[in-house]
Length: 61
Image (tube, rainbow, N blue to C red):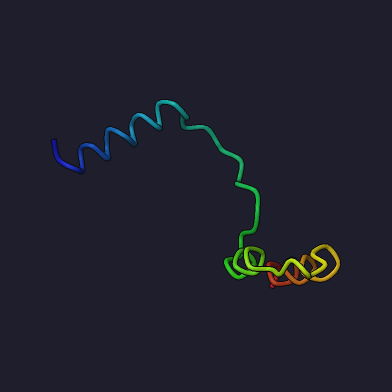
């Protein structure tokens, strides 16, 4: 069995389990810069007061 056919079997199986319906968008950050900033913030930062507003602004730019 080739790798392509194994991949196709897996894709067919997942599609069978999930169906063709519309799926909600995943939550979380959608901007890679925001993801990196969020993952690397310092513990001494006041996240809600300083970092989160910057990340929200970065994501909307």
